[in-house]
Image 1 (cartoon, helix red, strand yellow):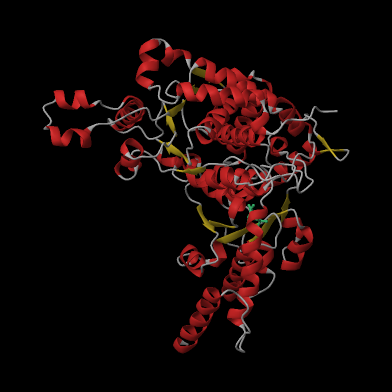
Image 2 (image 1 turned 90 degrees about the horizontal axis):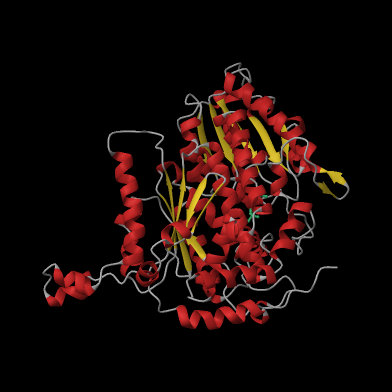
Length: 547
Ligand code: F6P
């Protein structure tokens, strides 16, 4: 029997951290670095090809000891083991959480409900590889005999953000004569713009939906079918121009897609943890099965590191406890993710679902209202663009915003001085955030006294610097898994279910009812609040007047 974990606020390490925080809150990174000339080398970990520098964190060795003690007291070790064993740790949905099985090598065994899931994973991967190779080589023909040149992934949330992010991130490795596009929004503009210049005879739709019932995806899928059949005329065209990625064979068949053209995944894969399942089919078509396998191997390397490394050298654990530290003690509301790599431009958007759908929770695993803040808001933009928009607030605003700065040693597109200048900005920003510029330094430059406060940088703004060699498929896998497991670490400390998402349900139900009210020919009897009623009436009146 597992020992009962006390509520967060009653864990001894939490109490010790509260006292410790009072001593440490005013301590400046300038002092911490001055007191320990080796801090910048000591507070780093290098593992699985990632150099993680957390020395510019507002912590001492004691802070870290206490945070890791808290991780122990929170049962992190047994929670990790339970996840990897396939236990149903998603308690509210009574599901195993096994994205780690998606990247397990052939021959490994993970049993869920008496069945080894790893062979199933590889069967689907093999099927994806055959199909991808067929499309990439032009062997898979459309209804008129033309080869497929355009691939449109239709999905939303986890069935879109991962594929979009991975395609952008790995574009360098993609087959350039294929056009990849992504339709997610129910706003018709998304579909219209994605298809306006394409020939249906050369276009393949991948309808990606775990449930195959999501309103946005099903609406876009029907529009895609109409668009295809308008030109190709014959219903048999659907079989050559539509494939599905889903857990729901019944709904796929109902839609009219032959289930032999369906790529399966399972209820133990959460939507936001699914980019390396069959949901990654568009990624595999873009970069090829070998690069896709390399990406999975990168994920797996990080999984093994997370499972086995001692906490003090465990990258996701360190990252997770630091995020927890700023949120719980410094009241930090957000974390900025700043990739200095243009190909990672959609990485922050991807992380928003991963982090916020996972840890945006208000009750513990036992359903008790929490008395502390849970998941912070993740956001960001690639450097250096962010520097010229929101960094002002990070440097001189009144809020504490811990930053994750991500950089690569090797550029994928070496051109002139660009990469040295890019990296110069990485190091300069982390330095400026941490150390700032004192009023004495500003005065010494001859700044008039009235301007000194405006030009003073307080510093003491924490950041992690995460450095990898090169943005390869494997590196992307490692990075994503790093954040996945950091999210799990944070959720474990907060004692919440990081794998359900009940908070998205209410809006879905209300939208269904409201859609009927908007579309009914008779004046509907509205029973919403007065604001919603008035908005619906106004929309109906003005829309009807126009049409
Ligand atoms: O609405 C939230 C959500 O359930 C996400 O968790 C999920 O990734 C997304 O919708 C899409 O769901 P599906 O893949 O079933 O269409």
